[in-house]
Image 1 (cartoon, one colour):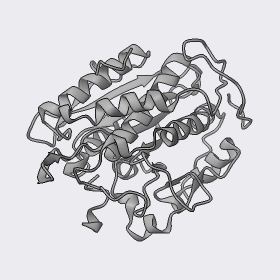
Image 2: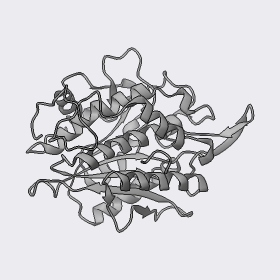
Image 3: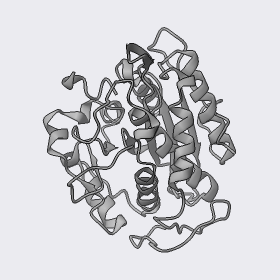
Image 4: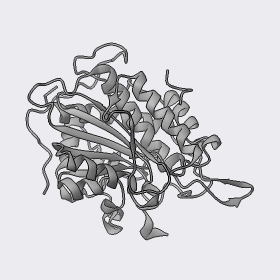
Length: 328
């Protein structure tokens, strides 16, 4: 998340066209849901914790782009997609970065829309899975594990991919992209946005997830989006959620966070609503880019709640008859 806050100086776990979002329907992840999902029961903290403890483990040495450690994460993501019905968007899941010297890969999967008229419209759901690698030791620890930044966003996106991959409820097509080299200057998302624009992809909106591992404090909303005033995404999301799910964080505007995460290259290339969902507010986590960004500081229950609350929102956006999210 270096680019996001610059101004502030695999294998082990794999294994409804309506504004009325069902709130109390239980879903079996392995059975068709007919578009219904509980906002409480799809995933849970235990599952989230297993994923986080792997993705932010010491074995990955901080997941620096182009490193042996991030290769382990890439393989994990590929296996996760494959296990839960998410097919490669390109010939393989790997999208080789053209703007980084070392071999580095975005991992990109997709789920076709099930509506013949809407399937040619795409929603891209993303997060960066790289971090900064190893840094100056503190008390003998030199691995910047990157649990909050951004194994948390990665895990959230993977669980959303699992839902849609197994349920196949989406009328519009969904692209799930895990970006490399965000910490080098948004290089993975810049590469993919340019590549998809050259393909003339019909992109409706881009929803990015960044630093979602700890809850906000003292707020009357659950998560904020960057660029809040640039579109009506918050209003649409809150209508579908049936609660004040998405709010405005003044600090995010103050530090221009809209331009500092992987949503921004898609805004630049496509000119469509592109936002980052985040629960880091500069006061609730003290280990940004430090060796202390460890899984045991994450709130797995909060993370599972975020996924469970967000799935019905994305599902409703994907299934609405018209493109409701508009730039202001």
